[in-house]
Length: 169
Ligand code: GDP
Image (cartoon, rainbow, N blue to C red; front, side):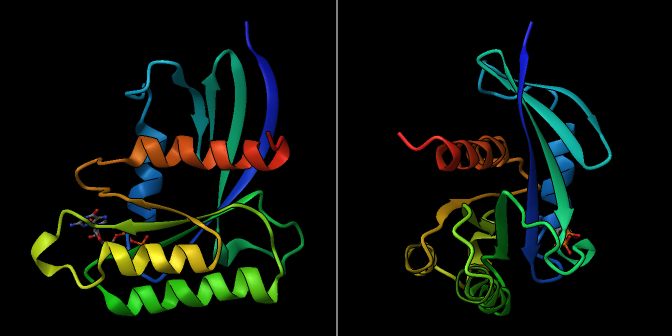
């Protein structure tokens, strides 16, 4: 039997059309992930439970728009841009600036470069994006929601970052 280790709120941010909904839908439908020790146990609308090494963690995904005046800060932030849309990269940078400099948050942030399947239309290079992630002390990952590429890794990565923050080694 597993024990509950936590309930975490994860806020997904990014420009319109970058794939936030598509990524969330992938999270919610990944019943059994490629990594064998991770099982999606149960889920309802915006909440899913992940079991890693017999430890249960529940993650709730919240939209930026539904947050009531920073009343409760999230446990982690996922800032998404699309690699074929340089405006969305500028908007992502704005969110990072807001979180780190205005909210003064030290919570984990994952910068997500989505739509990497659009290879020929790519406008933002890996180097540029990594540089931005480094500047704001974020993890960086490249995904494709349509190909389901690295989406499980993103989900587990979010949880890992939250747990690392709570229990630094
Ligand atoms: P949101 O506004 O950020 O929630 O964006 P959506 O999830 O609604 O996605 C906007 C559009 O981009 C939809 O037509 C999606 O099918 C498409 N889309 C999302 N992720 C990807 C991806 O990884 N690759 C490609 N090619 N299209 C994607």
